[in-house]
Image (cartoon, rainbow, N blue to C red):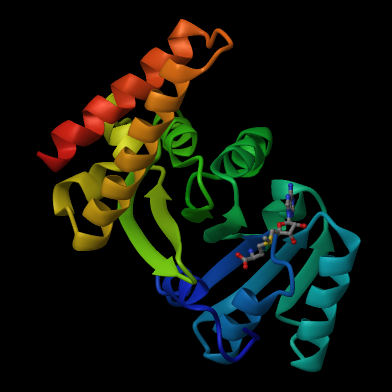
Length: 231
Ligand code: SAM
């Protein structure tokens, strides 16, 4: 992967960035996503935010090597602290982190969101708490994608601040749009997870040490949801 050839995962994220956007890519690592989008003429301005020094320097190098310093600003900052009102950001991508981390970035940076930005989020797990945050903060989920790359499942969630919206616990768990579409990849994913949960429940039943009852019940409830989904 580089600024010319993105991974399939980042290609799908890129596809949800509106043409002409002013993008903030938070946790940009090498800065490949904003640089690739700028090279293709699909965005007009970008901030690449990074909390860690090594990826921050890597992003600076990618931007410099592509002579894009005037159009892509690389900032060393945690989360949405990389954005200023003057950036007039219209899209924010936060990709390749746990869903809880993405939720915490959005929550602690709430004051920096104007509500006009499209959020393009690609959590690695933890989708449920992330969807919960979106719902509680007036973000409706407009698109959801599930893709497999290198044998990993990746989800992409595109949300905009045009709620209020109310999702059921099952919709928060599976994804409201994915539940409707029921793509083959989605059904396969949940078949795999059901096998894993049933194995987990069997192991817990055999466990010598006491396992908190609420934990067992939570897994059993989720397994039941999956059985109903697949029925
Ligand atoms: N977004 C790229 C992608 O999807 O390929 C890079 C993903 S990389 C696994 C996660 C990056 O997020 C790391 O470079 C890490 O330093 C950065 N990161 C983690 N927490 C962050 C935060 N609070 N603010 C900014 N960057 C963060």
